[in-house]
Image (cartoon, rainbow, N blue to C red; front, side, top):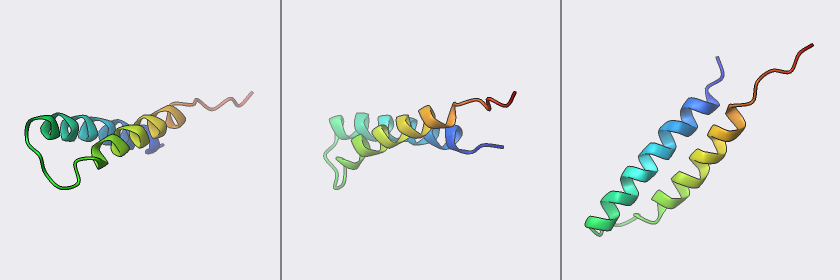
Length: 54
């Protein structure tokens, strides 16, 4: 089982939740939520590739 796509999806959702929380309440490290979103989208994109075996 390829774990890259699910990890990316979870990281993206966690980053979005962290961003939305950071809009309401200032907390230390809230800038890392944007990094989590970017890394999560990247992992989800590369994990979604299908095997091209012929």
